Length: 384
Image (cartoon, rainbow, N blue to C red; front, side, top):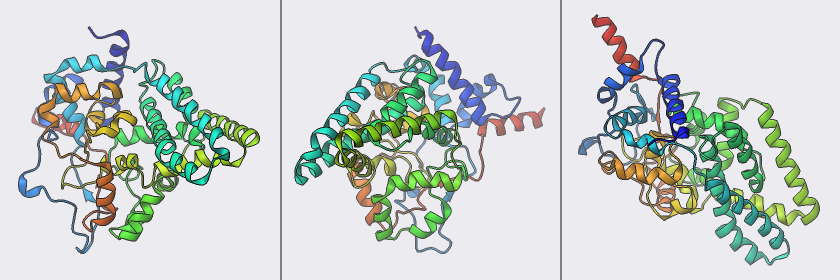
């Protein structure tokens, strides 16, 4: 039986779909009936279309532009029509808050302990432990942006601010609206800030030195890109995030000195750079195979990244928490097993930097929000 929380979230996800994709007057019943027509996402392109990367020597190199709906909503409807029991997986994961609290405590203690350590120890611990821990905190905040830690949205928002502390830079409150846009309007120009800015892509293209620089400063691109595309709104929650983060940083500096904050900030810098966990930024949506815009990774690094590698499953079912995404894959394996996958996050970093067929233009974009369901219903109206 679906719990009360799951029932509430089931209603929320229906509203999410309606707000994101359906035109006014489109009914949910008709949407369900047309699930098989809406979805083309469960199929894999024919063998002759499975091309790795794109030809960057061609004139007029550009993003891959699509005029059909993003693949996840249609596949969700199709899977739910066949496996409605997946709705029982919706709802918060209670263990996340304890895992996050332990990580915040670990990073704070290490920042204090390492302030007088030798440089070799400082560097090794920063790369192996600190960067991994801070990356896991980024992804815990990602989980909570979908309200998957607590029943009430405000509790998720407050907890995200606290999870932000060892990261050293206020980020949690500004992240959520951008990330929800990424789900609702995947690849839409001027809305989805996960995709490179046109000027950014034009400069980097497939140039190996510039791709390496991009990887080195990847988090800076993710932080600055929204300011160029869609500046953050300074809400009370964002201001609170800034104030609490400043209080934590000043406290660490005052009582434990510069090295304590250096450890935390370097952990943040490294975790988004040439670090194994940073491969997920590339693996999720880099268009390695023509026509495929989302990829999953099922390797061991999921254990320290809240299963963010299950990325097709996450986009299909954003109200299923990290701990239950493997169950989604198990139930609907015939939808996910045939899809192209990323086998290695380290490998995708190497491929991105070194492969001339991969670069900043290797993403799928749309000029506007596209709703296949709305189009189908418009056609039905014309036929009447």
